[in-house]
Length: 125
Image (cartoon, rainbow, N blue to C red; front, side, top):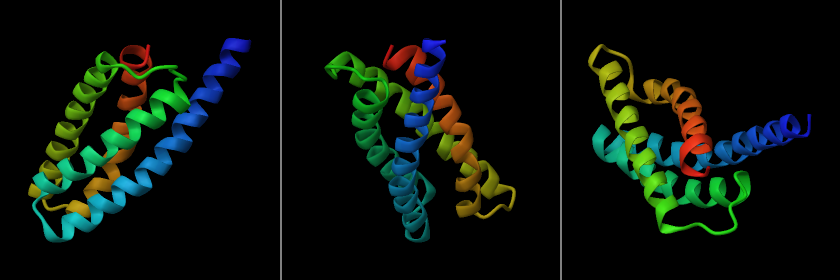
């Protein structure tokens, strides 16, 4: 029972800090998509997401006492994979006629679920 409460609290913290991170990085993404190519926009927002997320998720959600180089490398690999998915899916939707800003909004929930799963099981384990 206590473990379930801890997991629920962890998920709530992940969603809260994820929403905060989303607001910042999505604002960067949406604005940069207006002026720059999809590749640049997604990589810029992913780099900001990487820096904010590494700290918030590691310290505040998964409660690591120390963030190590190994943890950062794992987080970086996951962030790269998520960026690649973000870029690829937005680009795919754009090529079939969906506005790239709208596409970006639909991709986010999928990436959040993938991110939580791998952060919990692999990165911040």
